[in-house]
Every structure is written in C-alpha cells, then in structure tokens.
Image (cartoon, rainbow, N blue to C red; front, side):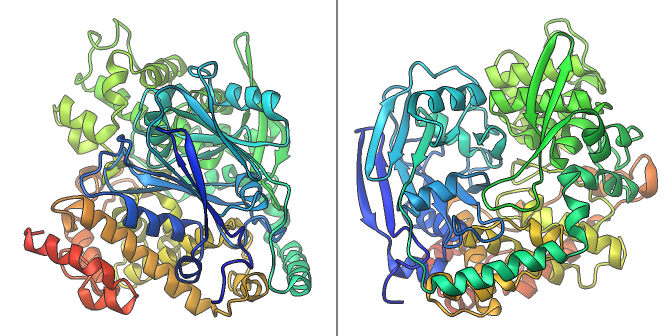
Amino acid sequence: MKDARHGYGGRVLRVDLARGTHRVEPLDPELARDYIGGRGFVAKILYDEVPVGCDPLGPENPLLVAAGPLSGTFLPCASKAHLGAKSPATGGYGDANVGGHLAMEMKHAGYDLFIIAGRADRPCYLVVDDDQVAVRDASHLWGKGSLATESALKRELGEDFQVATIGPAGENLVRFACITHDFGRQAGRAGIATVMGAKRLKAIAVRGSRGFPLADPGAVIRVGKEMYRQLFALPGFRDWTPYGTAGVTDWVNRVGAFPTRNFQTGFFEAHRDIGGKALRDRILVLDKGCFGCPIPCGKYSRVTIGSDEVYVEGPEYETVAMIGGDCCLGRIEEVAYVNAVMDDLGLDTISGGNVVAFALECFDRGIITRSDTEGRDLRFGDLESVLWLTRKIARREGIGDLLAQGVKEAAARLGGGSERFAIHVKGLEVSGYEPRYAAAMALAYMTCDVGAHHNRAWAITYDVAVGRDRVEGKAHRVIELQHLRPLFDMLGVCRFPWVEVEFEPSRYADIFAPVTGQRRSWEELLELSERVWNLTRMFWVRHVPGFGRSWDQAPPRWYEEPALSGPTQGKHLSRDTLERLLDDYYALRGWDARGLPTPEKLEQLGLGFTVPDLERARGAGT
C-alpha cells in the first residue's frame, strides 16, 4: 500500500489534556494496511501505547476514537465509530461502538483516529473543527446530564457539530458509565465513559467540511447503488424497521432466553407489554436512523410518568431485557422512563440493569438490608426501587457507591453467597440473553474479549437451530462469528443489514477495493479480524497477571441452578460441558489449554511482536 489516503481522512489527532496541546500526524499506511480501521486501530494503538501496570483511571491510559475506511462513505449503514481504552470495568482490553454521525464527521474533518492522553486540571471539552482544534473549559457543563450537555454544546457551537458526552455517572467514575451521542446513541460497554470522566473530559465536538479521497469514485457509486437495491429487495427489510431491536423480545422469550429476575430464569410473563409492538403502539414518536441508514432501528419515544414527560431514543432490545425482564418492570412506559433517566445520567443500560437486578436479589436474600437503603424496601417489579438504585449509583451515594463498582466487586465486598449470582464474565456484566441452556451463547460470553457482551458473537440463534445442549460444532460457530461481527467494527459499518435483514456480508469486500485501493477477498479480511482478536487477547495477557482459562468462566448460576420457569424450566448446562466447550474453542483457535495463544499462532498472524509478552506471562506461571 503506497499511502493511506484512499478511504481515509489520512490524519491522526493527538491531544494532551494535561497541557492543553495537540498535534496532527499522518496516518501510518502500515496501520491502515494491517488493521483496516475502527476496532483494529483501537486494538493496535492500545497494545502499543498503554504501559504495563497502567491504572485505567490514570492519565497514562489513552482514550481512543477511531473511524473505519467505509465510515462516512454514503454506503449502507456506514456510520460506526469505535472507542477504546484499558477498561475500568475489567482491567483488561476495553472498547465500545457507536453509530449516529460521529465517525462521518471525523472523516470529513480529515481524521481517522483521535488519541487523547493526560488528565485536565479542570473540566474541559475537545472541539475539532476541521484544522482548528481546541481544549475548552467545561466547568459550566460539569454536573449536567448527557443529553442536556449535548443540547448546550450545539447551542454554543452550532447544530452541525456532532457531539459525544458523558453524564454525572462518568464524572463520578461509575465503572459502567456510557458515552452518549446524537441524543440516544451510546458507546455503552466496558466503562469507556469512565475514562473520559477520569480525564475530566466532558465532551468531544466535531465538525468537518472536507471530503476524503476514494480510489475509484465511479465504482463506489455503482456498487453502492447495487448494495442499496439488494438491501431494499430482501424479505426482512420491511419486517425489521417497524420494531427495531425490540422486535426480537417475543422470540427470545419464546425460546426461554429472556433474562428475568437477575437471570434466575429465561421467561418473563409480561414480555408482550414491553416488546416491540407495545413500543410502537403506545410510545413511539418516530423512527430514527444513523448516518446512511435505510433500516432505522432507533425508536424515538415519548413517555409520561406521573407529571414527568420524557423523550428517549429507545428502548432497544438490550434495555428491554435488562431493565424490563431482569428487573421485572412489566410496562413499556416504565422501561422507557428508566432508559431516559439512565441515558441522561450516562449509565450503560445493560450493566445498569444487571447491577440493579443484582441489588434487588441481594435485598430479597437479606444481604442488603434496610440499614443499607435508608429504611426503604427494594422489590423486583417496582419502578421506584429501580429508579432509586439508579440515581444512587450515578451519584455514588450510600449503597450506590458500592454498586457503582459493578457486580463483581460489589459481590466480593458484600459476600453472603452473592458471588454465585453476580452475573458477569471478566468483570463485565452479561447482556440480554440467558444462556444456561444455550451452549454456543454461553461460550460466546465466556470468551468475548471485553467481557460478557453479545455483540461479538450472537450465537443464540445457532443454539436454537441445531440443539440447545449440543456441544459439537458450537466452538467453531462462535469463532466464525467472532471474526465476522468485529470485522464490521473495523470497516466502520453497522452489522444490522447482515444480522437482521440477511444482507450478504461479503458485499463489503466488493466495495473495499473501490474505496481504499486495497484488493482484499472476504477471506483475507476475516483473517485480519482474526489478527485483531488475538491481539486483544494478548492485551489481557500483557496487562492482567495470571490471565488465562480462569478468566473465561461462566457465572455459577448458569451451571448450578436450573431455570425456574418457561421453555427451559429445569434445564442448565453442566460445568463439564462448559469446560469441554473451552477445550474445543482453544484447540480450534490454536491456543494452549490455558487459553493462551501459542507463539506459532501469533507469528502466523503477524503478531510476532507480542511473543515476548507471552513468554513473560508463561514464565510467571500463567
């Protein structure tokens, strides 16, 4: 690759918040060639630049924002930006993905990557306006909600700025705080907003007015039009838009995988009152899409609870599952209201719902008592209990200060057997699929490289298709998905056209050469995704002493307790089955039985530079 111009803004912006300075560097052509963009850039820069022993909340932990080569190209759903840092939630590799218009604006300002280091001495926000870059005082914004901050900055700077913000939860260093953009899009997982809070960075605002070069503009237009036509013709196109992600609620409940009552079971009796049809019939204002999206999953809604009227983008399925089913709120209005509160406070609704449900079960069992809750009773299915806990967590008040650490740390401090029902992997709370009788989905959570997150390998449909307790072939399918799904994050496009509408994903390889000038087959692109998967694994090996198989373990509830109700009542996977799945997975990946990549595998993938870290870990007895 002779240069990194085609498909790229071509520049990297480095900001030092401690000094209030910045510099612009050319994008390294080898970085673009070997890691594509988005998630690939995040993984490589974090590996190279995060020092061993780095405190995730320390100034030396960089915050990264990266676009992909397809971001901002007017191709279908080319909206995605990737954000990353060493995770405050887990201590390992962390990233989060967001749609909206942020990546597009970055590219049109001429940037592919922001690397934000240091810690400001007072609240600040970053403004990028083409070549004009400034770190400005944000004291007047500190303490405001995420949505209020976005509105304030658009009034200050102009409506055409794209803004990403944190709320009070990020400011207060809640370990599962989220970044909000475009009034309802979230980079929610792994606590990346917590890193922003630690840096005293309230927001990032970007405006771009330039284009970026394409290798063959005529071919991009021609193939892009074909992609849109193919997408519009697919049977799932019209079925998807009315309900968005909330439309899967009935199916997930029907197969017994809907998290309910802190994952005690996978079936919620009130599911119809919180699913996609209830959303559309009772609270929807309009459909809302990201940049270049012809299949908008966003559902902009209006809800009145008491005398309080709120607007919210959502709820998405994950929020329906974790606030609705897991906390047992049985009305879409209640779920949407909590969604709006968490969004403005800047809390990830996945971890937020999980942590609240954990606290409710702790109260049920007498592990948390009225002496911890200011004399209040806490109950599943009670809106006021959920809201009280949510606000206490965001403000880090009382019991909320402990819960703000996430379920892993909270359970370790509370004791009383709560570790058995703290539903997390690697310290990251599990998202909205109950997998105690779904072997591939359980394995996907156990091996996900940020902790328990469904977006790397949504394998529950495969479990249902081939048999829930079947082991053979499950590890192979999870690995396939772990290469395919993150590849979209590297390219800078949304995966929903493929996963929800069944658009052929290899079409993105057809457009890759006209955009970038690099000719890569779909198989070659998947190999680059495998490289990144192994690199993020090596980040954990490098930064977490003793990392390996013991970190790829399921919550005990999944193999000790049968589901209480619904289609999977009385069912669960055995510990032996989960260990067999890990054996299969490690062997297929070319890793050893401890879950460490082998030197041969790393060299094969062009990751030989990580082998010294592997040898040090082995020498330390991992």
